[in-house]
Amino acid sequence: MTSRPAQSLTDLLDLVAAAPEGPEVVAFFDFDGTVIDGYSATAVFKERLRRFDVDLFELWDISSAVVEMRLRGTTVDNLMDKAVRALAGKTHEELMEQAYLLFRSEIASQIFPQVRTLIAAHKARGHRIVLSTSATPYQATPVAEDLGFDALICTHPEIGDDGVLTGSLDGLSLWGPRKAAGIEDWAAAEKVDLTGCFGYSNGAEDVPMLETVGIPVALNPDGDLDRTARDRGWARVRLQKPTTGVDVTSTVRSVAALGSVLASAGLGATLGLLSGSRRVGANITNSVAPELALALTGIEVEVIDEANAWSHRPAVFLFNHQSTMDMIVVARVLRRDITAVAKKELARDPRFAPLGALFDVAYVDRANGAQARDAIKPAIDKLKSGTSVAIAPEGTRMPTSRLGRFKKGAFHLAMEAGVPVVPLVLEGAGDVMFRSAFTAHPGKVTVTVGAPVPTHDWTPDTLDDHIAEVREFYERTLGHVR
Image (cartoon, rainbow, N blue to C red; front, side, top):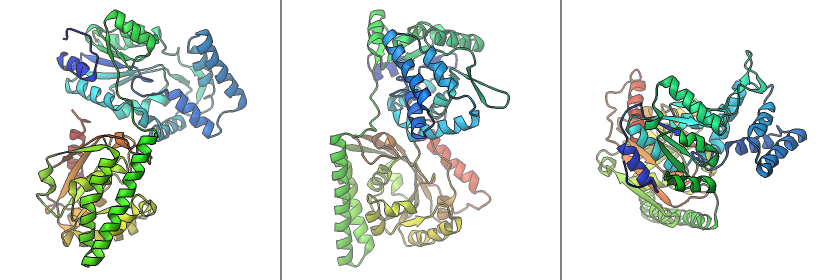
């Protein structure tokens, strides 16, 4: 495969590409510190504290278990037992609901972006990927689903016949050697030869796990695992951390970018008034503001198949939605003769409102279906007058690149105006700016412009099929389908 252990993501991708194809090769990933930059149990406990779901006795009990584990080197079992005991009386359904909420608000932003690249490389070879962790399903399931893992090996709390947790574990926590045993049991059941499989972990407690596979990788290793991996000649690779925090440099850049957008909008509005044309003002703003904002924030935009953005105008341009940065990127790609349909809350967002006024954006109340239908009438008029419309069919920002449900409004709009839909697939927008963040970070966003999709033969009866076809293009481009 290679003459030296992998030391970079490129080396690792080469290693994966050289592996045999097919589902008999499995990549086993640890969770905390390996797939996410942090510890899911900490996020869960903080969320419970915010909801006042922790009493003083439990706080003392958990804190003492953490201290004992760190100072005396005890196993995680004591801590896990106490944490699961606190879940007694809660239902599986309510805990899963809380798990998805926590994923969207916090844990999604902790996923190492390059983990997605690594997983995509395995999937391209037809490998199976398995998340193996000592965490519970209430920590790991949303991440496993979002990243497309084929299986989840984890610690299971005991659930009664009534769907209520008993406060005990169903077996033992999958920590250290028991995680390795869990992988061996899974492999035996699936008739998988582990000598041809990959294992990824960041912690020394997972040396037994890494010893079970033929291709062990210390991914984002702690000091002890790094030394062990070096001594044993294992691959040692560190991934770039998620850029979702607030730092002085990014904050200053983001403020400067916002200032440049507002200044550009002011210039465009002034020139629009002087020329007597709002469209002229909007086009001037659109030619200046995105370039300045992207340059100031250090964000590079690569456009693939850009000619598709110009071959059929006017059009309804669709884009997958992850962050506030999306509209800046879309404006950079489309450049002129463009407006948008947006949720009404953005009318009060100081980062968006000035541009919304200049571009005569149609604001939609998502809770009011009748109002939403009325709101698209001006957009239809815009399309018929030659101005294209940009709209996010998901209707809201998603926490990761996984697509939300596509709503029908954008497709009805194109069908009624008799114009094509053009998909813009954004990759990396959520990495440079998380969905709820006010600060952008340097990075790269790739935009793939799909071929225009004619709508002249669409009917209300066939609309669902057409939406599914457009969505498939997004899924395929984002690597979510093989």
